[in-house]
Image (cartoon, rainbow, N blue to C red; front, top):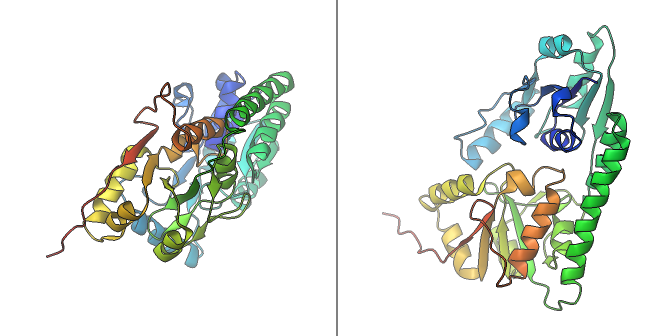
Length: 311
């Protein structure tokens, strides 16, 4: 079988099913596991993926959407040359990946129509169910069900760990820095599963813009900073840049007891198997123990920051 995955999360599943060699096309964001990096890239972003501040990315996305332009270009000629039997796509976030309409236009020009599996998970359990769907579509049903069971077993282990903990920290998860967004979709559910309470979002709800006044009024014990697609290092760079321009983050660090920066790209933004790693990471942050060590590439704590004095 020849497989084209236009989703990083689906690419990870394909690799876990032992089908890395079957991949004939991936998206520009499919960077894990390393075994897929040699696969031809079928998608080109219309906005530079690195080096821009959050506000600049938001502005460029808004301009492209307002003018009716697409955020990504599907390399139709490469897709035709790859002749995939199965294409994995999504209809959850049109800011994150190629849209179904774009894919439909490309398929119309192909002499043989591949199977298209469109994914749109809204919860952690939807993500695990999609593992089974991908396994079925790729001819690896047994492996897909085995992987799904492993993920559910890990969820059960987390539930067991936090079941008898009465202290449920109040949590706010920041998904974008400028404008300020709180994370929705599966993230509030991840917080619940990890033994916390998300005080500004409900499981399955969309991400939304909030103000710092709303964050302060919610009185969180812990602020989890997870800009969509950012690593810990990228978030650190962005916050350093923002502190040069505004006192908001410096003030926030003095209002909230604990602020953590987490690797959103690996463990929160992508609705794939590593969301379970993200829940395990949240459980370690919300309910720390002496025998657990969180690697700095996964998460780091942000200490109190001095308020920047503008000239």
